[in-house]
Image (cartoon, rainbow, N blue to C red; front, side, top):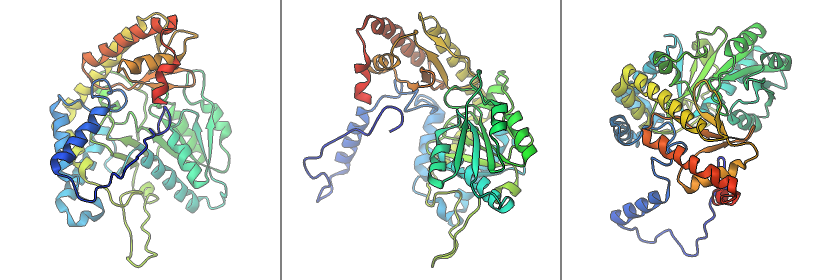
Length: 427
């Protein structure tokens, strides 16, 4: 499981699969019971509900209703659903317009950031096999902060991933990456922004290096892709990260983050059809003919697509810009509250997430344990030890509740009244 440990261990002493089905009322009651065991939406927003609109907004309600309306529809058979396919094409076009991508860019939908990144690796690899057939040991050069999904896909495929140490500013060290490139390098990548620190790499320099060497350049904007354009419209300048940079061939961005759709939904966008061709693979070496899919997965539900289409239409540019402005305000409110606590300091970030350090010498996990006990949830960042909060356009109540819990926990950890034992139930 993610950050804290293994799955919960539960012993089943009796048979739980019923010989005879139970009533709908009993099913629903049990589901309510399961749900009541989980963190609620307010306290769990920075983890479980991260980058999901809270229930009090109309957009959240519309998103859920749309998801339910289309959840049973299988996009594997979109030819039999012209209405659903038209909705999907409209949604893809809106992605181009929202992110300011060229008309000839090509959008492919995926189940999430990990699948989007796999598609990027695979497309670059297929290009390499065609255009650089002499490469027998393909490798990827990336900053140390690139998402862990790259490591996963390289492990599964046997590709070598060279994670290059970052610079003092915690961004990609361009010169170090340049030195790491070899004749076997087929892909260079950077983040917009990175998950550990919320910082943009120098993507213009990385893309120029890739273009100079004739190497595929991918931008991982899974986290910030659907927030960045509206953050700029809200008045916050950001580094360039998109197809305005020559040399960028593909970009990944998650709709189920700051696109505010239901999960799971992401996309990978290719600059043009020339690069999209390496995404395609329709195996036909079996009795049933070509097996053509949107990306890696076969059967996929249309629910999140309907959710994304609905939220995009309902919010429009004005609504997304207002939410981006609110994210900036939430970030400022968090920073002011946390920096006012003795020994705590927020790191300057370009976008989101935000991270902060606890007083020097203090056990970070003891602090996290104390916060969890007070239903103020967060994530650890290990190098260096810091605590991470996912910025959402939440209410002041969410921010003030978290900061109040932190203000209470810090002196208790300092006194030894809270120790690492507090976090053990979650490990």
